[in-house]
Every structure is written in structure tokens, then in C-alpha cells.
Image: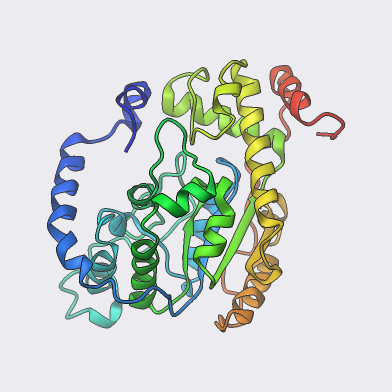
Length: 336
């Protein structure tokens, strides 16, 4: 899924388990022939929710929040291991974890509690949200860059299987299905055309704190701030010539610009713009708006909100001159 060079750059904590990778590949290849027989529908019975935005902008917190609502299905750490057979994985998850299928507490070992902790997007627990990138990369023929123009995606992506896989997952859970779609931040028009029944949840964070958080992620996952972290966007070659602070500031700037541009042509009932700081202060407001968007698409989620009342904003505005200078390079005239 990633180059050997990128794998070498990871700190020990974030290195892959090669034995696990090989075993999962074997299992998924074994299951694929059965999975193909389940690809019977291209249209999901319930809406999809795509979480979009820059890395370190609050996308994982938003996914954990959706998961805790109990009215939205989502890709779990357990389900992600069936990345080539997610419909089968969904059924296995229900069998092992759904209370309806519990028999005398034979299997009660899975962690059903979902907390709001994560480490660079990685969560703990079988039923905690997973980024689901292995699933996405099955379909996206990206090479050096994590990007292709939308017209090329229409030519190269197995759209029918992608639609059928997600429809199959939704139809197993009988709920809307929320997942991160940031790997297609630059191709929202593609997703919009392929999935009629969907909501795009775009989360934006204060750019300065977003830049600082992304730099911290580089240091934690790669051991220093010099190495590139997250998707290689179309501006990658240009940004790589800059210092690491400007690289990250440019990443955040161009991703947000691409998402905002992509959403311009999306129907109002299919999109939501969520400010991270406002969301942390009042998640109930985001819930009310999401309820209305889903209602327009035929799903009644219920007006009663039972989620968290507030989240702590983890970072204050940074004062590091390098970050401020990098910010000013891309956000001229915009006050921090």
C-alpha cells in the first residue's frame, strides 16, 4: 500500500507488522470469490457520509463522534482487516459484537466502548473507527501522487464494484455509513457523481493550530519534521522544495482550497462545513444540521441528541516564528 522508502522512515511505534500484512492478504484473497457473489446492488439503502478535510483537522474526532451516536455505522478496526471483503467483514462483526446475536455471553471479549483518544488517526479497540485506507486503495490507481484527474478516475476505477461494496456494507448494517474520504479531497466531483445518496462533512480547523498539529504528527510518526507526512497532493513536487514549515502550511492551504472548490458544485443538501473549534464547543449543533441533511435524503435519525456536550480544544494558537512565517506565506492578509 505504501512504498518501502516511506515504511523505512516510520518510527518503530508506527512500523507495520509484516506477518500480519501477509496473513491479511491471504485471508482477503481467500474471501474474495465469496465476496463477489454479494455484489448484487449498486445503490445503498441508506446515505453515505464522507468526512473530508486536511489531515490533523479533527477528522478522527469527528469519526469517533459519529461512531458514538449509535445511529451511524462506520469502518471499525475489526472490519478494516477485511478490506477486500468488507461485506463479509460487516457480517462477521455483527455476528461477534451485536447484542442481538449474543448467546449466553459466549463471546463478550471485544471492546465495545469507543473513547475519543487517537494517535495520528489510529484508534484502539476492535470497534473503534478505522481510516479504511486499504479499502480505498483497492480502487484508486494512484502512483507517485495520491491524485488523478477526475476524468481519469472515471476511466480507471472499478466504479460498479466500489458502489456495490459500499452498498453491501450499508445494507448489512441498515444504517447510514460514515467514513473518511480525504484520500479524494481533490476529487469530490467524482464522489458526488458516483454516490447520489451522500453527505460530505467537511471539517476545517484554524490553520495555525492545524499546521502545528501536522508538524507534531511528522515528528511522532517519522522521527523528524523533514519527511513528508500524509497524502502526496498534486502540489507535492512544488512544496517539497520548501522548508518543512512551509511544506505543511502549503499542504493545509491547498487541501482546504481543493475541498472548498470541490464542494461548490455539490447540492446544498449533500454538504456540511464544520468548523473544528465550533464543533468542539457545541457538537449538538452539528448533530442537528446532520439530522436535517439526512432527513432530506430520506433517513430519519431522531432529534434527541445523546452525544458529548463539549470537547476540549487541544491546542492554542502557536507562537513559533517558523510556523507564523509559513502561515503568512500562504495566508497573506488573513489574520491568524
